Image (cartoon, rainbow, N blue to C red; front, top):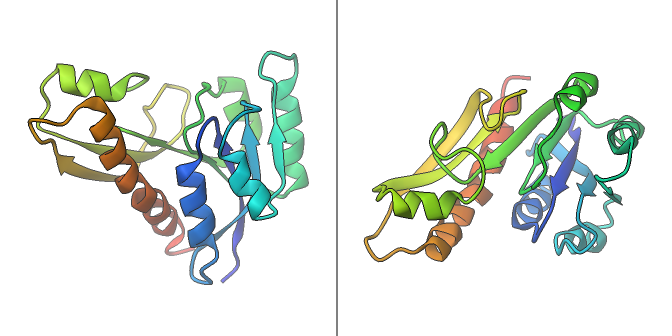
Length: 187
């Protein structure tokens, strides 16, 4: 199997990055994590890149032409797939169009419900009975791309936002890798 070079964008702890790195070590997994990009110099997830000797790039999204720097590095590392894994910046339409690569995102709700931020708090406030996560293609509209996979669980009446986050992240670690396998199953 020819593995595709993949870049993972993170902003925080990087638990999905850690899971993807672990799964990429399997000879049956279709991607190799070749680059990590973060907009946060203090992102704990950068440690996963360092420990695994994966090149990483910290981008100051307040600087002009930061997207060109990202695009240059994506080309340099021959990236075929970009995974947004807790990347807390909106990707511009211009970047999506210039990139010309597949970009996927993991979102902590059953899209199309609860796009955007503060997901868990909104789910609790609205009294939802079920939630989960979605892996989808990125397009020009926030959290609106074609769905690849969803995983769900029922909410217990005592669950608070922090508990939903923990339960959802456990599902995300499975869903992200399953979505990537599904994308490349017949290629």
